[in-house]
Length: 367
Image (tube, rainbow, N blue to C red):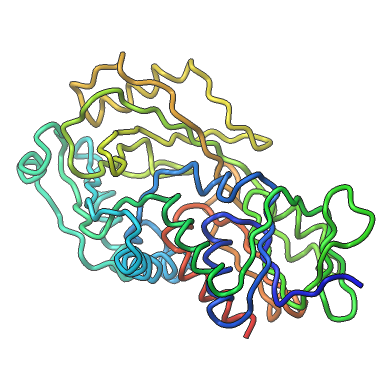
């Protein structure tokens, strides 16, 4: 007999852990499976650790709705549970007059998506807040902040486990079969299924499409294509004269090379956008000159010799180069017809910010 559990969540990134917590608190204590040695090893630990306000996403999209909802849930969760975070605010700036129209576009889109606290700044007002940031104009987002992503995942996991959830790492799922109304999980190298459940959530991130295609009974038409965009971060070895996060207007594929701060005040520049064919976190040291040039557009006095390669992340995208950025895809039984199954695809930024809202949506699909 295969062991039966209330629910299974595949993928222990921040979204998978948020889903596990939501299900556990509701009385469906899940088994959380992850192929790595520890939780959050992929996208969840290789990002800017920014709590996004919900500014950039098309009105009516899941990204727009879940980011705004998730932002408020996340701040409340952090404050109630002591997860380290800070509302730093963010400045989105135009390099020159030609980019001022883009600020108008951002402001209008944000308002339609439910973000109503943006403040337009003149060059003089920007210099009053950040004396080292020359620009033609900017927007201030007071709702943007930073968070300790590891601390958040620890809090989510702790609360899930307190309500009966269990995390098993080092357990890479090879395939999923359907038998007797349950989903049976086969692990790599196993001769028989390891566990089964009537409820299965695929939150495998970069491997979500691969796992979905290995799920018996799921029509491949409900599995979007997978694309990978690597983003590299360079860290700065010294103090920086900024108190806010500093973003240029967005670029195709991402938000442009920007300056973020961690909770200790350490600055990092990135991420850039590089389309790749397979998940690869390698950093080409030859990118230093390009990063230095992009960083000096934010901070002209930056000492390029203090800029060094930090780390890279890979965005799990469902659209490729030259295409309009895809929305989150959260596909439940009402979409694909498979009872008890929810697949999450393309959960890139603002996935961390949206994590608690995504978890609520997933639980609602399973009720």
